[in-house]
Image 1 (cartoon, rainbow, N blue to C red):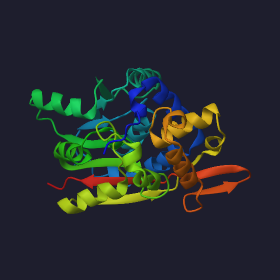
Image 2: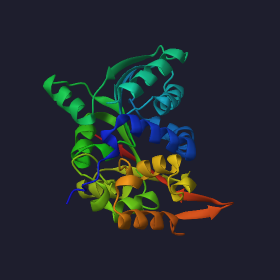
Image 3: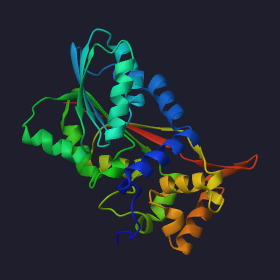
Image 4: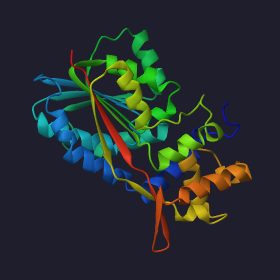
Length: 293
């Protein structure tokens, strides 16, 4: 049964506010940068199969910081290539921020940005309507499969867009820590018409059932959730909204659910207390799917 609680994604302004606070309190961007600069370069080596032009699709690219980090590594591996970059992002504010960032960053002349203010499913519809035959060499879907109605169908569509030796990168929370909270309270927290409780464990199960070739990585990541345990703390309430993906969770969740969530967040299996701070395990899983034919 779908949760009667309102999803955070229904209020873009509060979503962006809570997301910004989440980034400030977590090591997520550092974790992604470690992956992009230390692991991804080897993965990008075979992308494009020697072509002089590459097609890239970023699904749920946000404000573009991570995209541009990826391009810096892609450009090092393939210095002579030009790139078409399809940016798929439903938030007007994030798309604006990305445009500003790209316009201010020197050395991006080799990239043609194609801006798509749309969701992943709208992009799929648009692609099919236009009967596009263009294939992609690299597609990344970073922290966005929670926001599609059918993650498996979305993966299928974008995997089918890959050219030979193409790669599809998926980044999500891993099965432990934050992912455990989502799994345990899936039915109470999530309206599955709007948002999915999905971790890298779920994605691996899907890929294994299809016999698809992939590599997986897990990188440590954590978030300081100390304020979540102070009743009425504005930042704590914003963080709880993001952690649960429920709009105004502290004010609208039933007392039993709220107590259960706070109790789990404090359990030693998932978080540690150090110097008066509560630090939640929020490990990220990275999955790279190959297109071999």
